[in-house]
Image 1: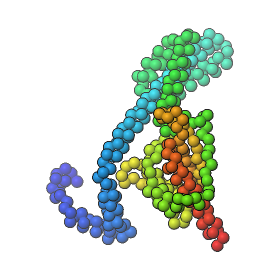
Image 2: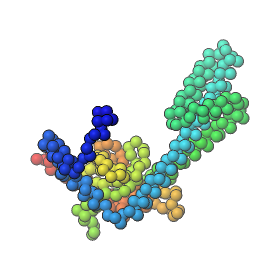
Image 3: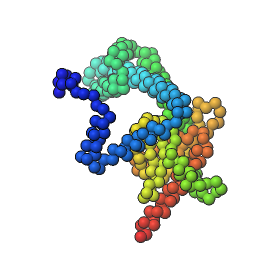
Image 4: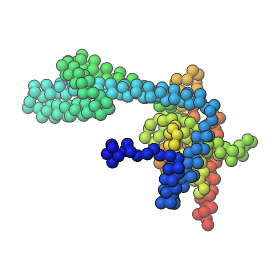
Length: 321
């Protein structure tokens, strides 16, 4: 339709919407529109007004997280540009040496390889977000100073940039300063007949879920809504959803778990112990960051372990029959 036709269209009324829905249901009986809209309305009603303060806090945390991500991205780009500058300077040195001794095949090969490395470093930096004028400026400066002092200075600057970017990445990961570089594995008790442990109650708690830091199989650290349920077939299912309304949950089958310790270097307490719940799933390994909340870690670890034992029992029973 052209612009003139669209202006003549009358506005839709509520009865028109109802008629459209009824028509769609008649054409597609497999779709339950009434149930869909009812669920959406109930999900909106389920958000209490008193949670406005927590939503403000959540928005503030998102802004802070984005600020940290931007800072990390800039640091990584700066480091990539610095490395490209070092590679360019080395390529110039190799080319000069090759010209001095044109009969030396080794020098020619080194010069060719150095030029290739420098070119690839520049492409990587550009792919990470570096602007061409930034690269041109740094590389131009690098190739004009190729004496030993200049190269040492370039290398030191690149090393500092790389270290700075790595530090920011660790700080933003949530799982900071792992003990001795490796997170020690904690044993998880399998005896759940202690007083106060009610599987049904805790299973309901995990089904409701919680907002946790999640390290994905790709190594990304994200803040997500996490829940664990037991399916009708007895399988233990990990559900992860973005912290926004109406987002589909990503599910994977939990196969095994263990726990790891780490220390939070940003914590005010000098020896603050934090907990990671490591789940091996059908879609890779997910690490749930419980922070220093031992009670939450204990509840999730024991409940999931018991759910896995129950799942294993159901599978053995089905195989037997």
